[in-house]
Image 1 (tube, rainbow, N blue to C red):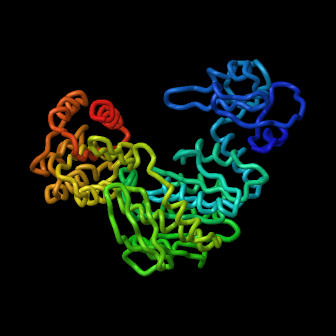
Image 2 (cartoon, rainbow, N blue to C red):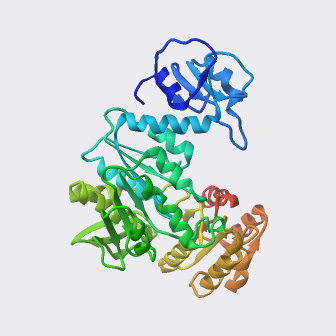
Image 3 (cartoon, rainbow, N blue to C red):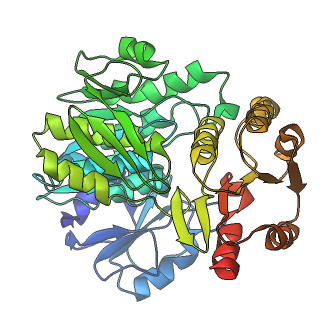
Length: 446
């Protein structure tokens, strides 16, 4: 973060101070009292399991110059900037800082593939531009704002991921970062429990169009059944498309698929991705599309696409005695379907799938768990284990599954069933905490 005058930050967040102050340059913004540095401002955010106001004194002891707190905060130690809502203050500071820095902003939203697409696009553009991106996959109000604050006057492009699970969220987040360009990876059924149907999800994702500035470029997936709908909603003619099944501006075709990689072809060039699931070709194609638009060399794009690897819990492939495919971070019907179809194609003698509940499906939960159960019944997967409250129906409909409510019981069963050379696919929503199974398999079988 570039140093900013304290008075400017107070103006941005419409804060009220408790004492006179020297208008010094602030070194940075922090929401973590454990990591705050001398000369920074501490923002006391409040979450479900924590309250930053409990750590204001600690922040001052570590050198915080000031603290942004809520109006009803009782303390009076140090220079306090009182606001109605500290999180809103953080968002307003980030929005105004983004305007001050004046970098170009690319936002990436969609039901699947956001984080991988963000990483590829960011790294592709880094060949020619000073580029930053979302910290990890923190794509909410806090994560987006803190990611923007990484920028400095040398930053030319910011590539930021935007998540959502309700109407209006993409609109709010895109108002913070004011994108020049946006990507919508696809329209699936993730978070459909908060919506009436997929059209409402498409409407929510397309809110980003309302806040585009300057170039107003939009990158879309031509294979999505909502491509034409989104194109009609766009307030620009600058539409760029990628696709595998339908003719697009940038097309790709899978030409080889291995255990933990695949190779695809696009415009006569071959690209290798170290992902076990070829569905990630779309992230690669978005990277190529941005490379073409910004005149990045083909060889550099190939290197970036080849070097990007799945994050832990998001498709990491672990090969040692047994093959572990770790998708424990999240699950929704479309991504699970694609993963199961890819898993079936792998040339491994025995395949075991461990599936947790798919969360945030609301009234559609039973339907989509049944859908997966009927799908898996016809797949060549040897053993099905399910875990949680909703996924029992998958085991029942598969005809060869076993359900567990207790994770320790599941571990015991796995010890009996898994042998050297087996492949184990693990996928579930965060509520299942199936990363415990991944850790167990690493410890006991590797």
